[in-house]
Length: 216
Image (cartoon, rainbow, N blue to C red; front, side, top):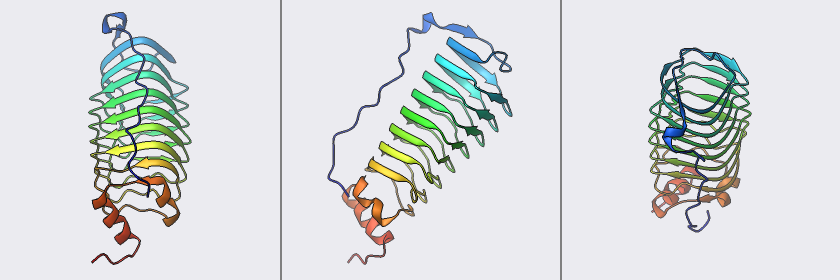
């Protein structure tokens, strides 16, 4: 378990003023690519799409529950008050994204590339990010209890003020993962991963107990 380190910065979306974005109404994915767009209140539950792209967009109150998206590409995107519960996203590439106040319960991401992303105030219990690469990502004040990161590579990722109870990090490759300030009871770890974690003193006791140590 490493000593505390400085808070790592994550590159934010490179977005122009809101007045520069085209307001779009969307009730289906009529196009494969959306650029310089502001999309609000779109009901797209159960949508299926392949190679969908969002470039320099703001998405607000977008419903993507149970969506099946393959090869999704998002760069320089802000997502607010939206939902992708129980979606299945295969091989997405997500870069410079903010996801704020959104519901991601049960979302499954496989073989993805996720970098420079902030998840803030999200409900993401039972989230699964599997066999993916996650770099320079911050989870802030999120519920990610019972989440799973099996066989993912997790580099320079911070969990701050999160509910991580019963989250499974075992079988993931960790580098500079900061858990300070989060609830980690029931967290599943491999002993070999400890050198890649930064924890606070209270969490250190929890980790030792998880590994079978008796703390008096």
